[in-house]
Amino acid sequence: MPERVVRLLQRHEYAPILFTRFINVSDGPYCRFLNWHGCDSDAETNLVSELEPFAKPELVFSKSGLCGMPDKLANYLRENSIQRISVVGIDTDMCVLKMAMDLFDIGIEPLVLTDCCASTAGLQAHLAGLAVLSRNIGAQRLHDAGLGGGMLAAP
Image 1 (tube, one colour):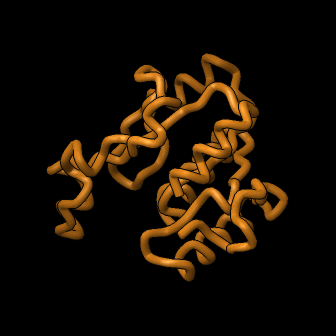
Image 2 (cartoon, rainbow, N blue to C red):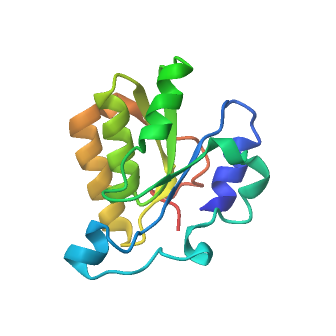
């Protein structure tokens, strides 16, 4: 997946490039309600090395909870009058879905690049996320970036 996103960014069609990273905090809902303690160390929460050259520290936003939009990112988007964002990442059925729906809710048009998204739970979860997104933000906002090589999802 990171290689696809790198190829996407090398097109130089997207600016600014914003990153989010999920950090599972010890008093957060994942630990408290699900007893899940992953994504709680730098090794699991840092950007992958392939994407680091594209990241500016001030444009990397940390998030916790339901993996949605952090307040700092929402403020940045408002301050910069961002009207449309292309969304890529993992997991289509969780973080990508929540981020796209949060963008939609604050009046920013999300475009989900389906071949630059995947789910750690597999293809079925990826497709389920796309189905929910299609219904909630509109099928016309699900786009193929042309990087999938004929595959429905990134491996």
